[in-house]
Amino acid sequence: MVLAQLGGSISRAIQQMSNATIIDEKALNDCLNEITRALLQADVQFKLVRDMQTNIKKIVNLDDLAAGHNKRKIIQQAIFNELCKMLDPGKPSFTPKKGKPSVVMFVGLQGSGKTTTCTKYAYYHQKKGWKPALVCADTFRAGAFDQLKQNATKAKIPFYGSYTESDPVKIAVDGVDRFKKENCDLIIVDTSGRHKQEAALFEEMRQVSEATKPDLVIFVMDSSIGQAAFDQAQAFKQSVAVGAVIVTKMDGHAKGGGALSAVAATKSPVIFIGTGEHMDEFEVFDVKPFVSRLLGMGDWSGFMDKIHEVVPMDQQPELLQKLSEGNFTLRIMYEQFQNLLKMGPIGQVFSMLPGFSAELMPKELDSSNPKLMNESRMMRIARGSGRHVREVMEMLEEYKRLAKIWSKMKGLKIPKKGEMSALSRNMNA
Ligand code: GDP
Image (cartoon, rainbow, N blue to C red; front, side, top):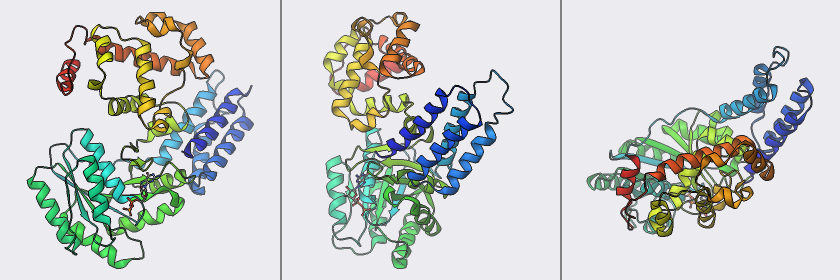
């Protein structure tokens, strides 16, 4: 992801400032100028960048900071907060609830990735226990129904559409009615792609919205349009009640930073980002963990979510055997990470994982005694892996948390495939 370059540049600027012997006006200005350059290169709006610089300078008033204040930390924190503020316009207008029927309508320009994203969104929720369904109300683009059908079939998600009916409003209403009767709790309506100049298609979108009364309208946008995202998001918002945005193709474009910040400037919350063509290349967009990862600070909660998503526990009999003996070691945790790297979309996972595992010694890896990891060992690991001691401590905290959960498995019967729900109940008890 080219955004990683942006993150790298900002982190380097912060690092250089941290390494300066004295934190004075010059060190702060050099750091902020570097960050400004990096943000502008990533196509973030000039005004946003300028505001961010001004705000940081206001917060970090070096003259007023008494000696002894950790200026480096204060500056780092201010940069982090301002980056978060820049990307955070608040919550979506509606969040679907499991078990209660919701209608979610997708709108966007043709080619933005709307149809692909509908399936990703459905698949994501299906994995979390929802009962989604897909309705193709795109009668404009030849082959749209076939594409949705193909994707839906692959993901085993029920779908509805028509080769003969040409009225998208009728298809949408019929599809929504049908899936409501079938007790689907997330009914996703894909509409025709359109351009902001295409008045007729905008009118059609309004009619579909009026007829199906969606609980949430999601605007899908291709990140490669960069700052033009602002105008597009604005145009769609003026026609239908856009409640959330999904930004696609964040895997390949330098303008990702521009698109994200431009959408945020329209006060539209981004809820997911698309990071590839595959069904699982789709991530929840949460500002703080995103900025954390952007700056190479790791994102443990996202990482653990990913583990649960791509490594179903009931497919790992050997692991379960070890765990049932009450022996959760750092090596097990490390091996699970390795498994994940083999299986998962590697880029997504790596960006969440601070890279220190190779620095652990066999004795440390195979011990299930957290006390073994004393301060000097932590320092050694941090030095060897080029990570901050805080990150090593976070990893160990996560290990302790997992070890505590797994200790409840000691002596438990090893579940067969499909018996995981019972296991989860035990673990949550
Ligand atoms: P629609 O016309 O808006 O419905 O767009 P499609 O869903 O047909 O997608 C257009 C193209 O973008 C297809 O080739 C998709 O595979 C591709 N695409 C969609 N989302 C992503 C993404 O997040 N990353 C990448 N690299 N490609 C994507």
